[in-house]
Length: 362
Image 1 (cartoon, one colour):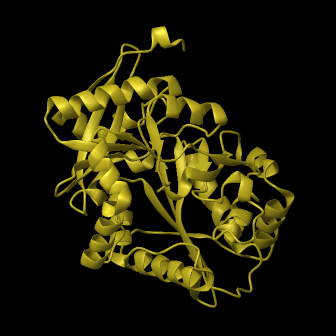
Image 2: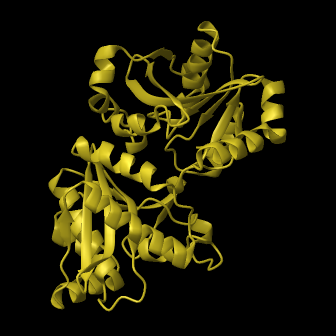
C-alpha cells in the first residue's frame, strides 16, 4: 500500500454488547483472531496481575477486536500489551493502528509509557524494515508460538494424513495397529490433575519450558472448556495416563496448547496418535488450521542445543515448515520512562512479581 493511501483508524474501548459477543467479533478479524485474544483468556488474565481492556480498531474496510492487557507501575505509568495483536489485514495497517491507539491513550490521559505488540505477521527482512520505519523497537519475544509449526487441515482427513511425513504417518498407523486408543476426557479436576502431572513429568525430564502453577492451568483449562473451546485427549499404559494433550478450537483455528507424557513408554507412536485424534476432532469442529504451538525458530530447528529441539522434531514430523512471526515490538510513548524500563525497571518488577505471586510476569 502506498504511504499516501494509508488507511486511517480510530481506536476505542469495546461496548457492553461487543464484550458480550466478544469471540464472535474476534474470530471475524482479518486473520481470524487468536485464542490469546479470546474471552476465555481475558477471564484468565483479568486480575491475574493484569487489568484487561478490550480494544476496537476501526477503518472503513474492517474492524479489529483485540485484547489489551494493562499493568500500572509507580513512576513509570502504564504499560499496554496487545497480546498477539493488533490483528491487521496488512503490515501497512500497523503504523496507523498504533497511531490511533496512542491517540486514545493520550486523549484519555492514561499515562501510557509503552505499547507492546506482537501481530501475527510472518517474519521477513521487509517486515522488520517496515516495523522499524513505523518507529517500533524490537523487544524480547514472549509467546511460545512466535515460532511454530502450522498444519493445514482443511482437506479431508485421509488427505491430511497423506500430507504429513512418512515417519509421523507410520507412527500413527502402527499405534492404531497395535491397539493404542486415544480417549477424550471430560473437563474437571480429574482431567486437570492427570494432564498437569504428565506436564510435570515432561518438564522434569526435558526441562524445556518453565511450568506455571497448577492453579493457573486449571483456571485456563476451565475457562476454555466452559465455552466449549477446550478438549482433553489421553492415552493409557498399564492403567495409568501416559500421554495427554489439551487442544483449543477458536474460530477456524485449532491450537495444541498443552501436553505431557511419561518417560520410557512401551507403546510406539502413542504421542503421534494423540495428535492425530485431536486433529480429526478439530476438523469436526470446523477448524482448517492446526497450530502445534511452539518450536525453535526455523533457522535453529536442527540445533540440538535449543531447549525446544525435541518438541520441534516431534511437531515438524507433521508439517515440515516452521513459521516465524515477527514477535514482540514496543511503541515508545514516554522515551525517558521507557529507558528506565529497559535499564532495569522491567527486570526489578518481574522479579518482584515472581516473589509475590510465584507466577510469571507476562
